[in-house]
Length: 154
Length: 226
Image (cartoon, one colour):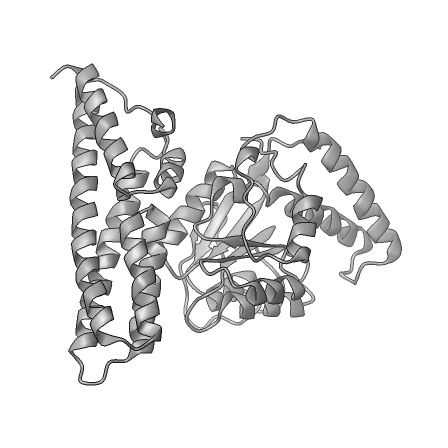
């Protein structure tokens, strides 16, 4: 495939991630921090996020398997996930975390479980989306092209 | 005054989240600061030499200076600013702030608190306890650009302390000197090209104290030499 076409596809795909709220402006902040000296910064941080979120989602699932749900503990896990999702700009994950924390405050188990299900879905979705994005970037670089600046496409 | 050699400034970043440590480390390094990251308040105090260390800890530092275990209240490695997360298990960022401000050897080090929660009472408590700034997370480049004036202030203070050979509370003369020095810095920085100043965010819920600080550093807080 021609590099110009790959770049245009990358731009469209990136736009769709922002328009569908998978990502927010924090992701652009991360891109500002990636340079020649740190070409893998985003991939590194995003990988850390997925390791972290997998651990937290497992902990949350385990917490709701207990006969007495420890809402303080649940809130602690969700707080961490909210922090890491907002640090990488995973907006939809962050929004579900916010909703789940208020259910937690009400000690609403059904509400929390619905959110937990959504968290699993949203984390999985944004993971696939970002993996696609990184794959497209690798292909552009392999073809000798450069990644357009996200700041410029909006 | 040479503004380009920012790596002369050493920042100690404290956060229990690995992702956020990576992020703050990158933010600070992009701004050419020397960075050491630790994952807890107690490790921060250990690094600063305030508490005796029980087990050797490996500090992740961008500097080549080897960190030897301190056994007194003297700071082995110069730290020009501490930036710490508020919400951490065990010692919170607020506890760390208090410990630093209670210590005669450390209290001149500027402390900046970061938090993902916008709680005005928390912000005020930190500012009253002597924090220089309160950043809402995720921290951005435009926030990091506000750190420089605080470090410049300390440098001036340290130079004066060195001259006097003793760390004591500021006398009126010292205060006057610092203010004069600040004026100079401000002038120099204002003549630099503004960078990243467009994203000046007004966070909701910040009280007058915060706004006053913002205004005070509005002109010189955005100049960064890379």
